Image 1 (cartoon, rainbow, N blue to C red):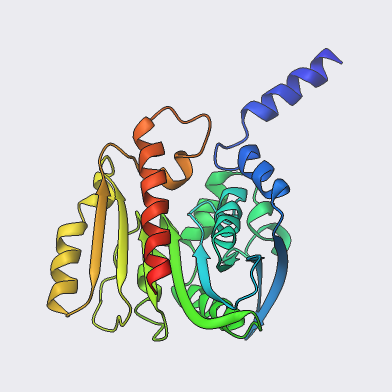
Image 2: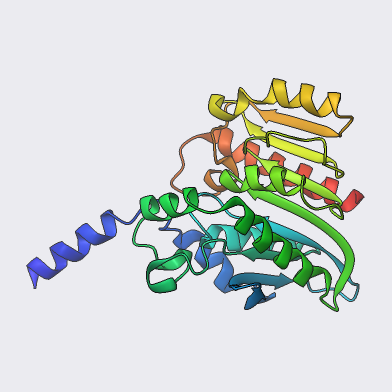
Amino acid sequence: MKKALAVAAILVLTVPVCFAQDWAKQKLEKSPRHGEWVQIKHDNRTVSAFVVYPESKQKAPVVLVIHEIFGLTDWVRSVADKLAENGYIAIAPDLLSGMGPNGGKSSDFASVDAAREAIGNLDPDQVTADLNAAADYGKKLPAANGKLAVAGFCWGGGQSFRFATNRKDLNAAFVFYGPPPKEVSSITAPVYGFYGGNDAHIGATIPDTIEAMKKAGKKYEPVTYEGAGHGFMRAGEDPTDTNPANKKAHDQGWERWLTILKSL
């Protein structure tokens, strides 16, 4: 018995931080909103997506939520739920659908490293096709009002920026600490950036992005939150995080995000 308990303890302690999100899962379980898993089919692909609806009499805009490099986690689903709480239909596609062990999805990977490696091997064209399919699904929902925005975090932030180069009916793209695409001339939607001051890896790309977007005549409004690290939108609500700047950036980031969404 003692040996079994010891093994169990080791397994608990070795669960990757980004997979162990009980605090996010608890928020989801307490949510009064309607959330559901849907299977979106296109070409030869079936993409699993988490959809959450607002409690509203009015039709609502759709926000496409792109997950981090860790795959579709409980935290990302909780972001979708919070968007619904504020009046938006949120769709979070699992871009690792069919790419996991035995054709599984994000939750089927054994570790963060395994999911990260799989993300790195995704075909960009497949990602774009999956996102287009999810966006088309959302816009066709009876409860949708025709407006569409995209938001992504970390790797997903870069994909949000890149998706703006491929999708012409976007009303806005929100980039949370993600890198820019190589080419921005085809972007038609305004792009809003959210960056951590202690995230030089991504922060170093901002000056050139400002110049490229300005030269192309595109709207790009980046904001840097001093003292915050990479991933502050997740870390800022993680009860184990010890950086108060992440919490401040998280709160200010949400306030800014919702303010812009309301103006669309």
